[in-house]
Length: 247
Image (tube, rainbow, N blue to C red; front, side, top):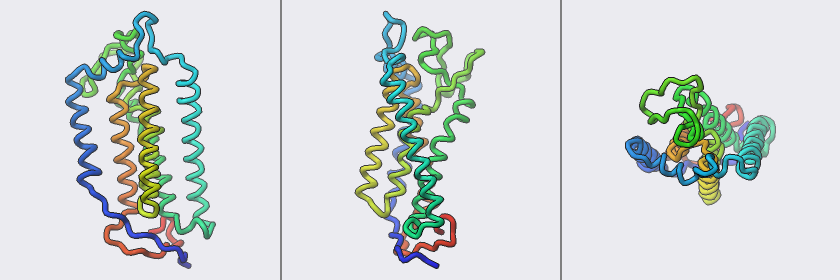
C-alpha cells in the first residue's frame, strides 16, 4: 500500500543553464587544445632539477588524498546501495526510493564510464611524456596517437571523477532539501577540484582532463535526475512502494 509520506514537486530546472554551461566549457576546452595551457600548467608542478613532479612521491597526495579518500567515496556509495535495497523493506526508507535509486544510478554511471573511455582515447599522462622525463610523445586530444607499446590511460581523470560523481548527491537532495543540496554541490565541486589539483601535482593528469571529467559527471548526474526524479509541474504525490524506483 502507498506510503503516507509525500514526494515534493520537482523544482524548476533551467536547462539553458544546466546544459548550456557544460556545452560552453566543452567548446572552450576544444579551443584550448590549440594553446599550450595544459603544458604550461603542468610545468608549474614539475621540478626540472629533480626530473619529476613535485607531488609524484608524496605520501599525503598518494596514500591519503588518493587512496584513503577514494575508499571514503566507495564506502559512501556502498551505503547508498544498501539504503536503496533497504527502501524495498523499510517503511522509513520507502518514501525515498526514487532519490536513493537516482543516487545509486548516478554514482555507478559517473564512475564506471571512466575506464572504458580511457582505453578508447589512449591519452598519455604528463609523467609519461618526453617533456617531463618520460618517453612518450604528446598529442592533442582530437589528434591521432603516435605509435607506442604503452598506450596512455589518462583521459578522462579517474580520481577527479571520484569527487565530481558526488554531484549525484546534489540532485538526489534537490527537491526535498534544496539548501542541503546546494551544500552538497559545493562539496562535490570542491572535492573534485582538490582531487584534480592533487593529481596534477603528481603528473597524472593535465588540467583539461579534469575539467572534461567534471562535465561528464555533471551531465550523467543531470540525466539520471531528469529521467528518474524530475517531474515538471507535478504536485506532491504519494510514493507508491510497488514500483522498484517509485514511478
